[in-house]
Image 1 (cartoon, rainbow, N blue to C red):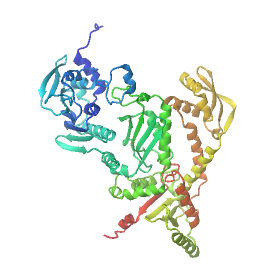
Image 2: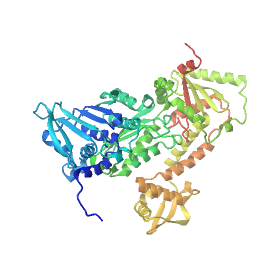
Image 3: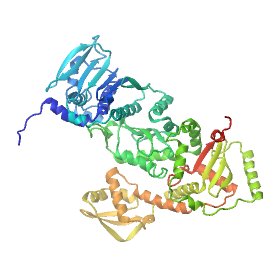
Image 4: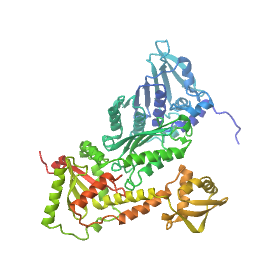
Length: 601
């Protein structure tokens, strides 16, 4: 074997660069985070050839003193922490002190800066060279702030350079980094230029309208038009931001931005909580869109768990999970038909452009998908319409409603039934089409859930206690969380190092696969700190009951019955989607109907 020796400085930095500098976008991210930590309010990024040839980041931050410039390119040199205790109160984006040293080891880097507190009229420039990466400093004309110029990335590590993608792909990743940071700091101006062509110039956004405009520029106007804003305060927690309506969903999870104390992260606890909140309102296989900000005490979250700081660890993950779920669940439940109609009115121009996220186009896509009940089941027979006398009396009933009520409800009043499947109603702005089975299914489902919540959870003792062989970690979890699991209706006991016994389960789940359910619950508790498997199984049964207990196709309803269904929809939470996530009603404004018939053209 070779003898042990100390690596030279450049090689050590190149090895460290493998953790921090994956591609040009990684360089842009690290440099911009340093600028934001320096208090910059204007940031300019110039890129050539997707970042492989040149990356230049200019800011107007506090700058770096001449005496500190050489240290800035050294490993583990930082101005953001001093003692071990500082790691528990990190409020900055960067703190490791490795970024500039790692970048300079795999590129030709030059750093120019002028400190705002300096009495000198010019700035200073530092660069490194040689195996020992010795810094050289020289004066340079520079305003307050810093400029970092990175040329020929990976020029001395050709194996790394071969793994770079095309120029378009690499620039797309840089563009995404700019967007993420722009959403985290509304008060900062971001300018991006690629190959001498300006791509973005995002001006500071201080007012609510300006923030929505920036989100519209980054996420697209359709997201803003079909998103609801929330701001909820919890015990030492605050969640605010924008989440999309269930009708604005994506085929991929590509429009999801979540920030913890201003730092964008991807966390399994967060993802699980969001997925739970959308569980029974989102069509299967679709993903929600959101821009959310979680604020909590710095000591309640550990950001030092990954070199690129993409992941965090919460001190109390169960508290965070439950707070996120309850906040999003409540926000989605509070969406009324009136709010959705107002959103639709504002989104007509965007929908005309055929954007993927437009509510109307998505509703039509969802309606054409293969559902639990095939369309043929609705149309196996034709029921003749009521005779003219009945029709005349029902239309007279609707006319009286319009005359008696000065204010028309959001979903309007029923005027007819189509093929025993759809209810046609008109409100003050246009036409409402309701899938009566889907709508009644949601109403019945919510009533069943409310009835279950009002009653204490009933437990059913096992006739013969069920013994389950589990791992030692699962057995330990079952023992530690015994009280929490009992609150879910499960009574179990650890009887050995790798064995548990189930004595009671919720009575509504007696016919389910108990062993698999217990294993899934323990897995969730270990992974996320909590489990909703019991509630999920219970809701699945209630959903089936609601489906079979709802009005079926080809059942003729009178006008008063249809209006009663419309009023129930307006009073029911999540009534815009059925239990399976497909829409229960769609809306066509008079303007849209006029376009269909070329009126006014």
